[in-house]
Length: 298
Image 1 (cartoon, rainbow, N blue to C red):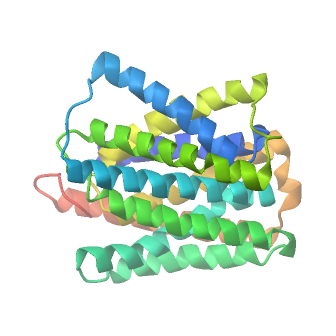
Image 2 (cartoon, rainbow, N blue to C red; image 1 turned 135 degrees about the vertical axis):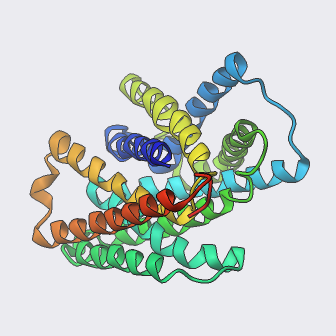
């Protein structure tokens, strides 16, 4: 179980760089996600070609995977939109509400009792979000957009439980990325009609960032997360993802000097979020030690 948690935190560490790239790349949120998925799908396709050829899965599993891919793409657009409207720190910290939404959605979907521990840990994270939300009125629109993205993230994480039991989760992930990319391409005419064509072409520096973002921080990260979600609950995955803002915020403060844009209220909220993650991690570790098999959902 310790190995699973370690892999989970590696994935979250990689995810911590996505917010930074959201500010480094000059494209808007929709175009950024579009090119990110192009690079991610090519990278993942090459990996499967050389190490794990694509295998057949059922039509039902394909449909579920494609739908989840559409949800993922929509969530990513809201995520980067939030960063563009505010800053990296605000954009990534709103993801912390995903644990709260998951704690509500997962029991409803899987017909199990609500966990008071999960709700309590989530409420600690929500208190942290409230502190962050109140620190500067300039960023409230960005926070609101980010919260919508967090809700979509929770739906995606819970939905992944329906496909994570597949015998070949590489194929499932491929159809998620491919389905999401097709969705973005089909929506491109609507985007062009509304926003025009001024911001469709990345520059050379954008391409360099997109390559790292799409290959390492997307394809590799999803592979790790997809393996981990088979071993732990969607809630644990969602709540541990709350550490993503910590990595992103530290990087943003180093690269963009965002420390000058936040105050004591922001840091107090960040402490609450970190506390919620630590408490849940301790709970997961203790439950793992009590398990005889070591392969269980918590």
